[in-house]
Length: 133
Image 1 (cartoon, rainbow, N blue to C red):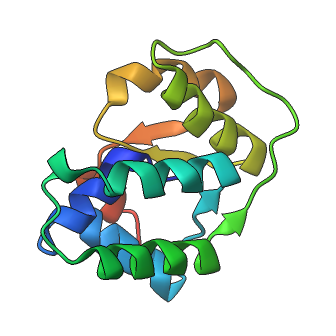
Image 2 (image 1 turned 180 degrees about the horizontal axis):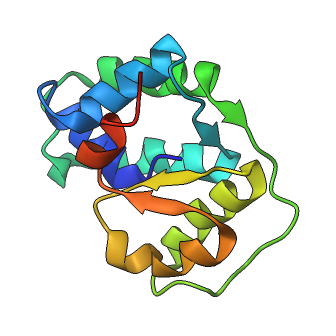
């Protein structure tokens, strides 16, 4: 499970762990989970001019389309809201819970402390990349 901030970091730089995680998902090294609302958030946040993304919008769109192709499409039947301090984080956690994800990758680990209740380990991108083959 990939939080939006990890996607944004990958779109800003091809030299970090976040970018490596997207490439690993594309190769099938792990299965990303995605819901329609999370995909919409990826699209919305990545199109904001203040995000520091310097690649062309068409490239960003192509990357998000590719994520939609390779990710596990997860329907959400039960909402756990409100659970976390940020309602948008609740949406990410709901996808992780519904998909049976074992890991949630984010730069905001403290905001996802309650994920452990659901058996989900919250990791920084640099920690998650070390778990991949």
